[in-house]
Length: 502
Image 1 (tube, rainbow, N blue to C red):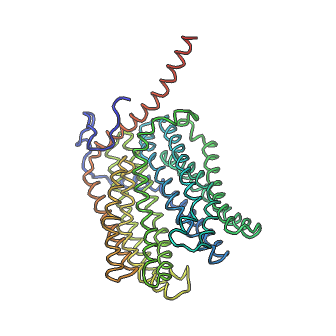
Image 2: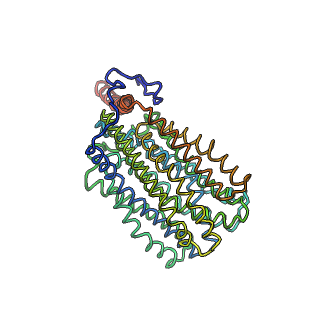
Image 3: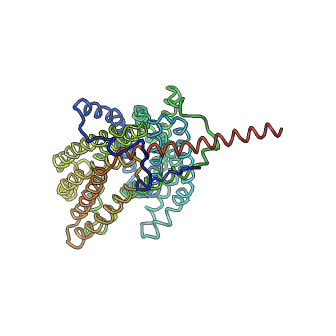
């Protein structure tokens, strides 16, 4: 294939059709700001509702685990943590590799490319399920090797074994969500999550209480909800014919032309995992502090708070990724820049609200999870630091979306690696252990990581040449589409030769 795409922006030539001064300084009118905010939250609002409903799913599952007893709760929580680290974060990150291609292809009206990208991503994720499944099936010896209680390991093994179908379901739902969002279609995501949650409690009750399946029932109910979500999404697509322009049917071409999508998927996966794993690492580190039981319990409660708050910047991040990708794909660098800057302004406003929430509810949040006064006091003293972390987390999460939409996930991965593990981790260890600041010190480390991440990303976006990025989008969609066209042309040549020889 000629003119191979180079995703490193320092290596892509700026063609004469696009010049740096084609994208003027950012001075949008008030009407443009209002319009862009409306466009962003037209995409983001259903995603926020969908994420809140999914948050309810984990709450119901944990409640049923707790009903089964302390051992079931500990084993189930351990299995969920392991599944997040080794499975869900990997699949979710890899799926985001299609984000830039799909959104930019939609803006460029490259319909065939969107369908091919969806197929390739699904196949890549399904293949990744094989090694993940092998790892999940060996969870018990792994946990026993690191010193976990054998009885808890048995519960964890049972739960994660019965969750295996969820890997296949996620390999289908994650790409479908991005496929729809790239077309600015997000209402079915909200609808499917609502229907899934509606049945989640009854299914749990049936499996756990009526059929007496215990921890197996909780696991089965988890993937049944995801199955319901998938079926509703597919039904919506078929009824509304959302796929009519972009879906050409399954073909063997989905096994070809992986280099471009993998060059985006792998950095996206690394970026997602680096941040996702940090919070799991925080739980591990809290278990090494004095009075570990209280610290781990408090950390779990605090992470529930930050997970709830994270829904809002995360949804905005997905929305701006779509908006930036659509505009760059459509050759509109000024609009892409406007969307980027306005989304960051919205993220800053969100971060202030998050800080206000953390300070206001610092004495209430812990009581929603426990009656232990020591844990409640520790939660209350740390919540303000959690709020300060959101001052950096909300903008940096949104800026990650801008980088994804402009096909620069490698830059995001490098910034996350340097910020979380080069800045945040050493400070967390220093404050938490050497300076004896305990749990408070660990969150100071996270605060440093979020601050560094925000600063680095802000500098990158301030120096972005948006006209240059529009040309890169043209290169990306054109080069990726050439793979599809070449596959079609090769098949046509085979048919013609067959007819001549015949």
